[in-house]
Length: 354
Figure 1: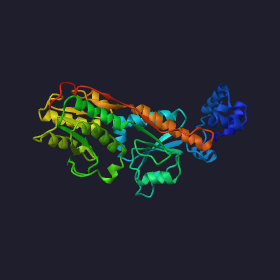
Figure 2 (figure 1 turned 30 degrees about the vertical axis):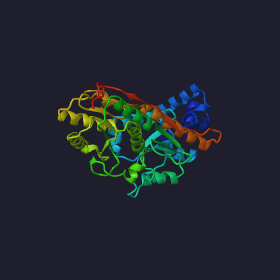
Figure 3 (figure 1 turned 180 degrees about the vertical axis):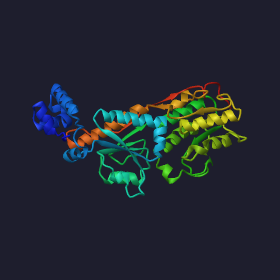
Figure 4 (figure 1 turned 120 degrees about the vertical axis):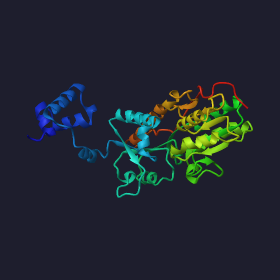
């Protein structure tokens, strides 16, 4: 069977080879009817489209946007909040004919994805600013958007109001009358338990941790409350045991503010095992509005962030930066901080306790 080329399609349709090429790569140059006729003939002849490598060389673009993911990629695909963010990014890129590539943070092998994978730009998601993989992306001078993390001066960041949301959560607990309050968070080292020292150096650079801690302390300090800070390493496998130990103390907290909804779910389970009623004996607040918050019993009070809006905003900002590289007249996107909302549900409803 003869190889199908642009010229053979052009001969069948009765147009030039360039017109056929435009049907695939520059559809705005053709009428809709002519493009549909060309594509129909191409499909009938079994033509799959221009070779991606050749098109990349011709246009100087790859058609791919990377997302640098510092944590385990299996978590990115299994966690519903992470999956929603990535889905929103992919949907927005797909409207422009672009693909999304997950870029792992590994730098130890012969192939370093952040250095070697072809892409037109990248989104750095909640990374340590000193992550070696991020350094590779920056050295490549790719258009970059920073999500849920600190960005270098002048760069575009898409964040949420972590501090304001945490402050609202803590104020809610204060208003219910709680005085013995625990903060269940990450960032104080590899061992679970009561935090006795400062944040680790990497955690101190982690915007989500520092902003949520600051928001909690804004409200608690103003109320004269010194919270019990409980460390939970990034590996959440030990969270149930850590929560159980926290609730087994003679001066156990009557309210727990959790860095994430996943941690809050562990506290709910530990409270049930200890025979504690929620919210009568223990009030619990999460953060993120993970879908699981409506599946727990009681439902979980949390701080809602619009993950879909965050994904769309990140993708649009990056598309703007990529377009600006090709056309200096395109205005540069601005950083955005998206609002959050306290969602009061069953895990805190009821009278406060002393």
